[in-house]
Image (tube, rainbow, N blue to C red; front, side):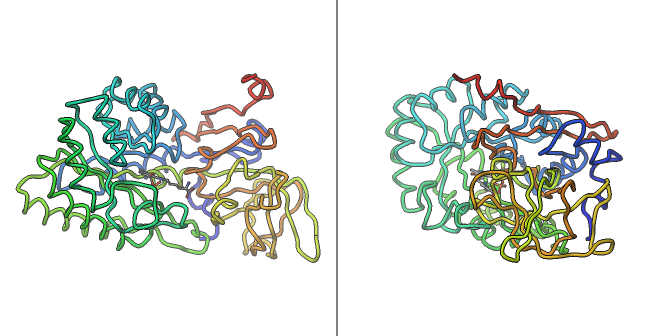
Length: 415
Ligand code: LLP
């Protein structure tokens, strides 16, 4: 497709320059309808058995997006006690929160116990700690299904090279720790990693986890984790994740398990990225262009503090160039190789390297696509830059500020 923002009418009639004038740049902009559609998709991954999709809010913990997820009937995952408290604050009920931390203190576990939130323990040691403070309690364990998947080695969370989860070889030891403290393991979970477009490794992990599940008695739930991918190369016609294929093959594996054990526990998934990625874009302003040693650079106000994914994982985000509210495309503009950078004092502060893009001029807006997941959530104040504002374009076209930009007073407020 030539333009995602045009073909989806992403701004629902708002002019990008008006959004930039009213809210400033850099600016995260979300589209309510797209977010809701993605939430509905994950809610229906499994329809044949009792099932919940848990929005993994680490991908985007803006309270207004959490509230949309609650309205759409999603459960939620928290990876820190603060995420759990944020969820409660947003109105999520404690029964619909699943706490999946790693390497947390006994105090943090105690807080989850006091709040009545189901917790998954990610090592024998943490299970032991949980047992010491909550003898006779109920909990889940996070298991390593032996297969990982993900867009970068830094986001693969199962298999041989990972800090996460209890290894298959240790399942008997986990059961022994549980019985030592009278703990009831009512659920098991896994997460193979983040962003796969081919479901094959994930389905293998499902098979492996279901095999391990048979060692546990009377499981109330089995959670298969997240990772469902988003096409980050949509301007090059990369196709969406095939949920129909996933569901068909996923349910077939569940059929075998349910037939063998004779009942269906509650099945869960934990999608983060898929829920909020395509419903968010990032608008920035080009403040300088230059040629250095024969290469053209366009310098924007989107630094690695605003979107760290390109510098951290060399992740690709499609970029649309907007001049006078018109999206520049190969059909209406010349293209040239250009490196788009941010405003942070590091040479790795780069959004894309020598990419063929419509000619960029000082004063243009750039719009980074697929910025709704792990965008704002990973912002920092490095270089004493403010965290940006976030706006949601509502179904009726209203542009609603859902988090204000930081101010200088915010930066001083911790001293
Ligand atoms: N469950 C657990 C236990 C997780 O650790 C994660 C993500 C998820 C669910 C959700 O995975 P998703 O559906 O979003 O792939 N910052 C990286 C992604 C890190 C993901 C970490 N865990 C990125 O920007 O690509």
